[in-house]
Length: 191
Image (cartoon, rainbow, N blue to C red; front, side):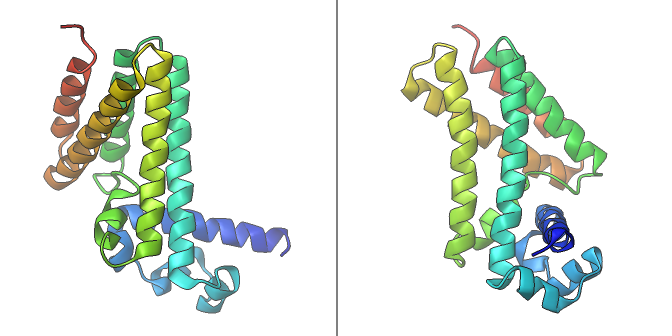
């Protein structure tokens, strides 16, 4: 595959990432993807012989990796977990508000839709969530938390921001993220 073919393939992955985040797996059709990328349907199967599931998995991995790189960047640039959490929640709020509440978590809608019906895509979603959890666990262990506490705190943070993103999207308000951020900060304050 030449340079143009690789660029087309990457464009399709990136556009699919956005479509999955905004509308989910079920509502994202290949015809819509073709229109968005200005490519014929046959190109999809040329670049992705496994069809929609192969493209979905690659798009989810792309989104998951992008967000994980962001998390790593924030964590490496902050001195304390409280600072890091504030920055993560603030960035999530900016992202959802600037998209007029179309964007949220790039994985959540697809994860919920495919949890029982599509093993391949569901496994990719689990893999991404595991990656994010591991990123936060590693950071917290580096800050002196025990592995068990780091794991519990990471799962709590993920649960808080996923729920807050869903509510923010539904309510078209940043308030759920702001409340969740304050709650997340409490997890790190000494008793």
